[in-house]
Length: 527
Image (cartoon, rainbow, N blue to C red; front, side, top):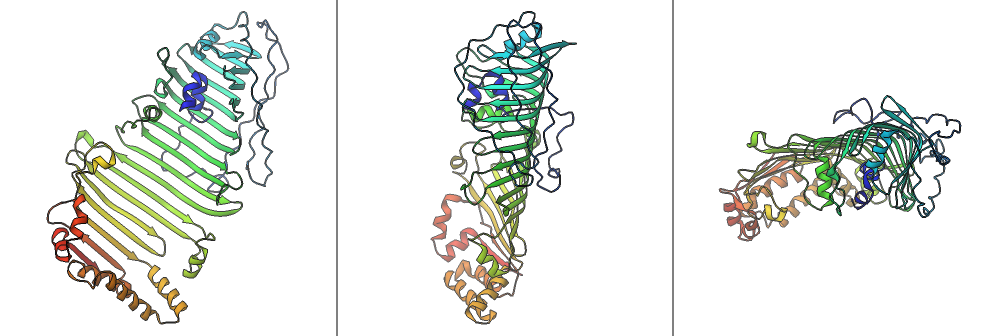
């Protein structure tokens, strides 16, 4: 955010999207759509739109000084930027430290009047030069345009088309062959960029530009590549309705990040798609910049991360099919706020740490799923975790439900739950093969029958629960049936006669079996 503040209008707009933006005529796919497919689930970013052939050298008839030398665009990103097939082009050497900025060149005589509005939008200290400018029906086309900021940051475009620039914004813009060079030498290349309905509210003198003082209708960038110690490539980025107080949409496709050698167990991360909708993006960025709390959503919202793969060289380390989060505030100011989170197909591959354990139990890898749904009635202060379910495929599943009362609607977490009371609790475990695999492995290692191994587990459980006296008696009986293989599912339920303060749970647990049973109302079943 500090970088966003110091960039000014041209740089802040670009930094807002991590280095560039572009517009597409089609809307982004709806949230929940499959990750981009191009030769595989986790296809690398699409190749950039080829830049047009360079025009023959020419001199602007309006220029009073020779035109600047065009900055060549970087080569297009290969189909696989970092892989060996096809070989990736060597990353360019970091740009040298920019020299001291020369005095701003004079504005060419007879420059199209609309460019004067653009210069006013860019603000003082930012210079605009170009090889040629053509004004056609209100659209200004620039060839080899260069924006130079006083601190050395530089933005170049092979072609730039501007529609109705104003001192406070611009109706539309299109660009091809963009290159952004930061003052630290970081180079970002963007094949195509376009935007609609961009406007900026000038900050008061002596204050910095805030993210919520900019607005736009639509931005999109295609084929973005960042060179540096951690190369990043992005297939496309789309942003819609970025306006303070309004719900916007953000989408990023085909993210590919190369981690430097020696960075850990993972050296490459790919994400098929990231998407957010129904969130006040401008207000959220402004709040984060001010280290405040983001504004709550006013309607339904959703976020998703799809098609994640982690690799070390050519060896897969892990993957995630999708992470999804959805929710909605209470309708008409009454009823509960609802939310749901899911993790789909989270896969952990064998590693030196867990490979022996997986092999011992007969697993090639571990694949899990998680889901959780919540309901929060802010008026009543009632929070329900309707069902948290964590399952490991071909192993087992663990379910949890909790109901709390007296939860404050706002404030820090430690304050919101200060007066919370437990109204209900349920824990369920379903064994699908894990206990059988553990028993078989221990039987092989100890050369004992599996029945003897399981009976030993049941005895250990009795010792851990103090012999199953009082409140724990029904729990112990159910757990022992599960450990002996006589049941596959155990459910433990806590239903206090009246909601008990969460801060008093530890004291109730120390009061002895009868006190625990009286306060919590514990029951257990096995089947």
